[in-house]
Amino acid sequence: MRAAYIMKTGGPEVIQVGELPTPSVGPGQALVQIAAASVNPIDTYLRSGVVAMALPQPYIPGCDLAGTVTAVGEGVTRVRVGQRVWASNQGLLGRQGTFAEFAVVDEPWLHAIPDGVSDATAAGAALVGITAHLGLFRAARLQPGDWVYVSGGTGGVGSMVVQMAKAAGAKVATTVGSPAKVDLARELGADCVMNYKNESVADVLMKVTEGRGVDVWYETQREPDFLTLIPTMARRGRIVVMAGRQAQPVFPVGPFYTRDLSLFGFAMFNASPAEQQACATSINEWLQQGKVKVVVGKTFALEEAAAAHRLQEENTLGKAGTLIGKIIVQVSPGR
Image 1 (tube, rainbow, N blue to C red):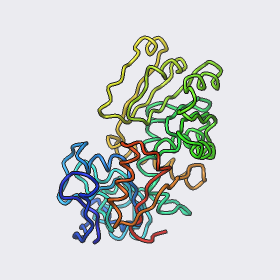
Image 2 (image 1 turned 135 degrees about the vertical axis):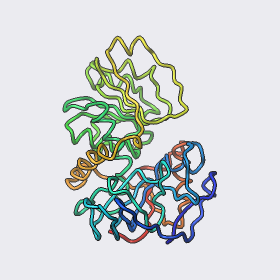
Image 3 (image 1 turned 120 degrees about the vertical axis):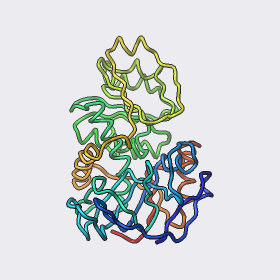
């Protein structure tokens, strides 16, 4: 099979594309012919060695996939040959990734693709959708009518947070960095969109919430500004962080505890298959209803895997601002 892979960690240039053996399906697994994969920041961190995990050699990067089941192992009952499926949590903790024509996936990580949903949409919604869902509902216990603030409302996770919060009956404020992103965030359903380059986020949040403050702050950036945003929280508000491995920000303890606030941190790949399946059920329902959409910023062929990683890295670490939405790697024509 054709695959993008690395033999050592390093920059995007270490990614090779060539022939590797097609994996064999084992008990409790399914072989998926991949149509589309997507790129996430964690993919670049693993490839570069910034995040240290045991990697097989050669190592195929990629967490997300959408494709069709071509074979199943003994004991598989949730999926069948010929079924369109999506998955995340690949390429992690010793598992091979998704930048390849085929992948073997443990059955619990697989989810059916709803009718009318494209492969690119399913792949693009996978990791970011599960991440957004875990933060909003498992961690922050989002309620209808809550005010949610999420940074980067047109990014991969941020755009999912905006749409899922609206689908659940919440009100959403978000920040972006350009006029084009302002328009897109409004299209996604945000009630309040701020350009952080020329607006005071704290002042606007207090104004739109009529001085009450926000109930849920979902932080997607790598350097959270607790000093600015904790004073904008409503009493018993919930703060969610899921990025910034090296961050050590100043934390204002007084304003935090006197407002009865809670702080939740989580890594998506620590969630159990059952927890992720619960997320997938909601994601599939909202995708089919059109309440959640995937913004695709750029599509690459498998042969361009290094360029796809470079674009993600430039925007995640370099703050280039040249990407709006998800990066999709089209492995085969698909649907």
